[in-house]
Length: 255
Image 1: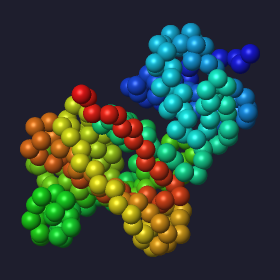
Image 2 (image 1 turned 60 degrees about the vertical axis):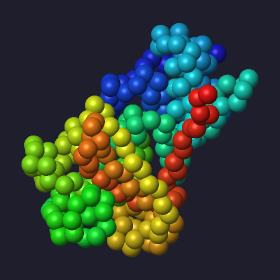
Image 3 (image 1 turned 30 degrees about the horizontal axis):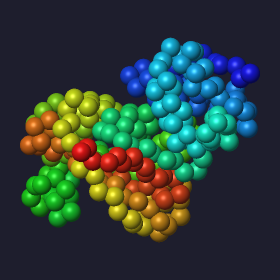
């Protein structure tokens, strides 16, 4: 019988959804060798008993873990450990604004540059401002939380709002905290997202540990405030194709 381990919260944030927290606990145990390759994880029933959760939460925790690529789930056979290190490609499963924000909160963003830009036509269109206007720019690398591999390089653009966030975004030491506070779920009314194929620029190849001009994916996101009247900021990120895939779940329209 598989021994169920108690929850581990070391290095995790307690504001995670419960299913994600449990999924991260199981993930940490697999990566540390507590569960060997080809061994079975606890059943949904065992997880319910161990964590005092509902069957639905247990099922979502195992689904979250499955998307990490560490395990394989088969009807009637349970959840089997397939590997004890993170796969080369990360499958980012997004089904809501909360899922997207959780991804940002539980990866590490290493800020490389903070400056003011005179915007060109592309950035002006992204922010809805005029060419030659000034915007705040933050650039950096986002790393996977478990194996520390680079996921993407992100450019963040923000029209000056003359608020407390402006000054924080201009300093490398405070920019990441400003980003987390500004993108709190209570501040966001909607996120517009565009995904397009591209080639990895030579300038990012070394930092992202991928060949220059290899296949890549660019994701542009506009974050709007609760009234939908203002763009809080725009992010534009480039992901090497070998490191990232993006999944969503679609449901039939309500009748």
